[in-house]
Image 1 (cartoon, rainbow, N blue to C red):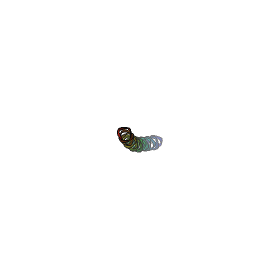
Image 2: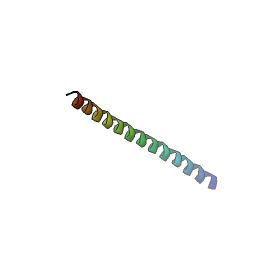
Image 3: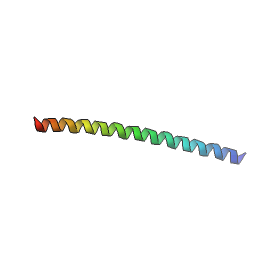
Length: 48
């Protein structure tokens, strides 16, 4: 019984890790997109 519970907790931990990794990846992508937009605006201002 103990081994079964440990296995479930381990699987849940892996699942949470995957979800967190996916969330982090999304946040980083959005942050880099925002930075790209800022950079474009700055380039246009410099050119103008």
